[in-house]
Length: 551
RNA sequence: GUGUCCGUAGCUCAGCUGGAUAGAGCGUGGGUCUCCGGAACCCAAGGUCGGGGGUUCAAGUCCCCCCGGACACGCCA
Image (cartoon, rainbow, N blue to C red):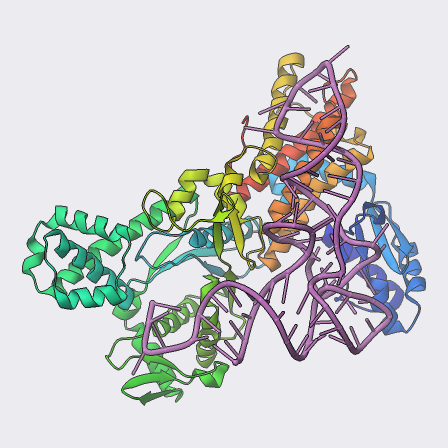
């Protein structure tokens, strides 16, 4: 809708002034009396033409008036109001096309990879990972509806020091179960090991599986076995949690495969050929300071092992080779210092810096009883994502994660989300859907009219009142929102638009009864509600939450 | 110390490439159904947009300085 208005506006400007502008705004104004869209285009033109913006606005408004929209110049702004018939026509389309109304096929969409979560398989997912998971999932659902070819990918850090430490930790706990303690192991464990209780649980399982067999092996061999076992189990856990959350991936990419395929060596050789690598203190360094980083970074440590940085470069080089035209990474906010060096390294390999877009997802704090909660009562650990899903349910978790722009920290109030009142935005919005379904059930019962089958299209023209049209606009507006996501990747806009829609619907519901004497009025209101239902349901599918029949 | 992000109503936050009288929700106070679901709706109070300077016809938004907060700064990942 916005796109159509914008195009018309551009044509007008071109006709009147032979100019092509891009940097003007076109947005819904704060005040309803200023129309459906307002533009500052006259101010921008005023600069170019060196004329009074008020006159320009007037000229544009005069030319802009069409049958489907009206324009008015006020104080240099051009306020645009969509015509009633136009809104009704669009609403008819919505009723006909249903969820397909909100999307269209983008021409030649880029082949995109979206990498998100990618938590190390060294422990359970925590709530911060969940936020990234949901944000990434919703972005990918939207892109897919616009016809994008998209790969959702999870990068598994199954090589390097972290997983070794995992193996060591589990083996250490395993030995403890037999009352044995190797002082050397203990020292490493105390310093760098994973202390969570899930490690002890894994050790017990390991014991159940292997008995005391591992005690008789070389420590390094036993640690390897423990490592394989633990990381496999933890990865299964992670997959299960993501499944509970309703988040799917197309590719699970193993870091280790970069080692096995020799790609890591290959990339280092490439950098070597470009003389961007040097050796110092027995380590291999990449001259990242030449690419905007504040210092050079180590690729291979003096003990011969590679850093994560090295495999990350290889991984992203590999992504490039796989033919992705655009790669989006959702990273936890604690990784932001890492961005420069990675993009720098890719530039060194000849990959343009806008090929990779890194979006950061800020921290989540759990609040209960007005206090920040860190520990789970049950396990004594940090509350895991799984705990949270069990506690408040999938829909609430997903929705709340989407109620904030992902670049601001989020407070997740557990008590609030468990309340079934308007304080809880999830219920507020889902309730609107359940209410509509309730009305439909009642109408069928009393009048034998099935809103799901009845041809309601002819009655849309009866929807004339300001309040009818406001709801129609709210529904149509979701189309603009989805479209804007293609550029902003900000799924929280959806939840905001839904809350607005639900609010207007609840108001409407309280002021206008559907089941009234006049049958035309009844059918037209059914049409309105049907449109709201479709809009809500479509959005719920995108958000990955249920559209309840009753609550 | 350096870098990134942030500071908007009592609380939690929107405010999209600068635009009109800064918006929601919760909380607080008062109200609304003879009737489709009151898990709802309406009204009201509540703001020097952290402070100061600058650019601009126009600044919550851009620039500079200061104050306060989060996170990151390793041959960790």
